[in-house]
Length: 310
Image (cartoon, rainbow, N blue to C red; front, top):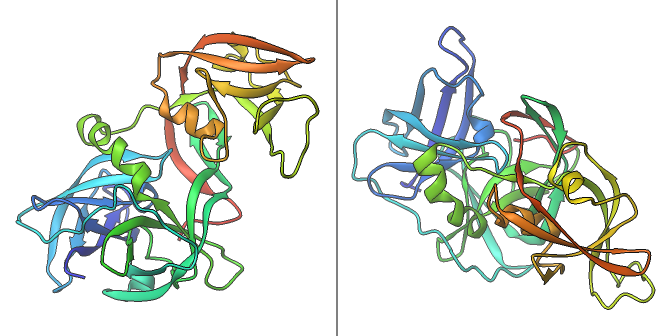
């Protein structure tokens, strides 16, 4: 509990509105992890964090990754108590977890539950300098530990106190259906976020439907998993490579797609500017296409989807 803080961010220097969420120390020198949506796009104003003993201290924004909905703050002072990040967590459905935060501004609140599901997807619209883009958050942990507005950015921890996720969203029309970003997918991006203030992410530029052999059989394919392209966005990596509607994407850089290694994971793991090989099946033939991975447009903020951020 002493490592968890309440985050208050003013919405602009002249605004009286304040966003309230949760965060937690992951380094003794005052580095705090939270959600990007806890910090408004114009959060150039005051940011303060309240410690578990009630002390309020100033903090600055180190980095904000809107696409990943992760932000890093730097609190003044220290040393601070920290939480251990579970780098290689083997979570299982049914495992007990705790959510710690400030729901509805009730600070120092802990709720208990279990891991209800893994690898969940929630819809989300990200506003960019090129217009809104519907890109969901993927690979989330579902839990029935009660989370509410104000829990965002707080830790989801195992029984031994290790952080396995950052509480991020709730199903607004249901009871006890919450979602957390897996911490194991955040850790590799932390150095870039701390050093540059953001995370560069590539954009393939396709609309697609998953094809899983357990659900959809596609005759004659030696591949266990694929995505069916329903459309290609203009002026993107996919259009430059020659990907077309009706193609089946089966591998990226020679690595076949699977339930664990999805298209989203493959693109997210590639570097912007990297030349990638896209393997597609088209009219029964396997074709290798190459293109340089283009960056996503500059993200400004997120617009809640069916599952609004809490």
